[in-house]
Length: 377
Figure 1 (cartoon, rainbow, N blue to C red):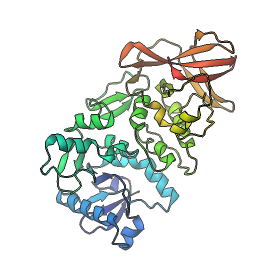
Figure 2 (cartoon, rainbow, N blue to C red):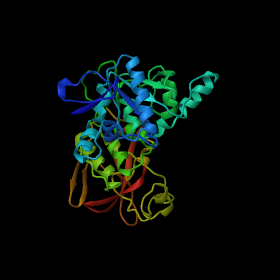
Figure 3 (cartoon, helix red, strand yellow):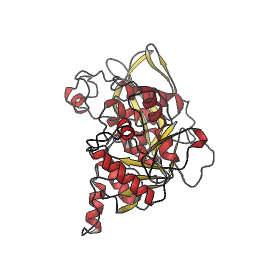
Figure 4 (cartoon, rainbow, N blue to C red):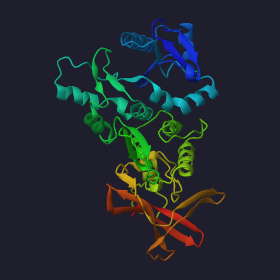
């Protein structure tokens, strides 16, 4: 079920399946005094600033010929946990199916007397590019148009502004405006001209510079990009990101998931309070697992892609009551006084360069147990 707003009279209408009409969709940065579904239904609290945003969006969309629009603040009943979960699991699909997505940048003025250079600097500096939820809202739609804060000035589309979007987000201009296909081992199937391959690590890296108000939303905002569905458990904190990685691991044979890294003064020490605090982790976070504790650990992974046509033994992963079980081809990296340090190649290359293969280091304690060292090799 999707709930849409009639642009002429702001009435709400519910649609199912094939009965869903064409609609435009809003992407924006949440501000103070956004209105809820109940406030829109009951015409309550008209003093709220969120009313003006919804009215102006509907007026703009109606002028553009749209009868219906979708706005996340007031088209979801957030008092219903079941509806909220369904909406978040469906959101990527809703943005993808919209006729057009209008990205409203409340902190970017109309051009006016600004030079093009000044205006583009303001565009690149918009907080819209720093929020977790707007990543999928940038990448999911077929058509996306940026609007200035007065609702009058059309800044440009995500395609016409590719270079500026790349500068603001770190996402390659070869990806912006195209449909994403997860590499997952480089299948030999033919791809259409509007599709681009990317890796798990790349998508994580695009999210690593963004933030969300709630810790769990950093994971939930990425589900659509990975075509993952999972229940929402607000209150689980950073475990949401762990669950997301386990779902990705079970769906894709893309070992760039393990290519994350964070820099620590001593890779053999698992107690680094300064680092943990910088990542908003507990002071004594137990480093050593294969999965990243936070998306920020993927900041250096923008150029990683799985290596095609590898002849190495496949890496097999599964979750057990003892932890993450991994089978693959290990290479002895060096002997260490308290156990060998092994290299696990991740079938992953950097910068599309076959001489830049990526692996991770594991410290082996006995024949069936190892702890990851945080660095890459």
